[in-house]
Length: 149
Image (cartoon, rainbow, N blue to C red; front, side, top):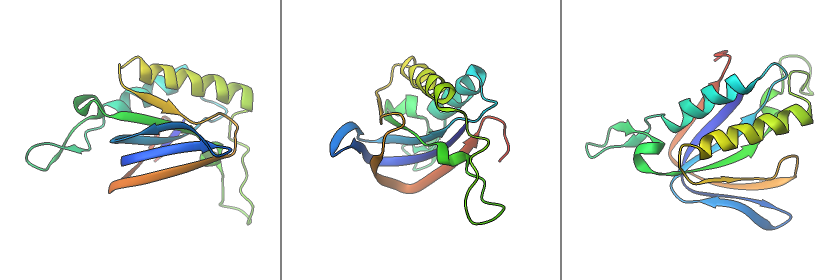
């Protein structure tokens, strides 16, 4: 699984002009599921993300996690994170999971994050979405459960 994690002051996601999820301070997680991913990958990413220490403490050091701040998550599925652009001009999505597998693991990941007791909002799987992100910092991190980067 791959995630782009952005620390935000606020964010929202809409489908057909209707907001499906919105948060204040927290993280937007753009989540891609690969063919070889399992629940173990989702467990790893959920734990890593909710415990990332990128919120500032009283000394202005990035030392607090999403859990420490009781901040929120906005999780948006994004298969294009598995786009391979190394060859040619059209990305190949061969390593992205098929929709059935991806949706199951996406929903599993969302539930794992909710199990931490934080506010979790989502987009709509396989929908055309508009995402508004007010990146705070900016802080943007890339996380891969296979630790490829």
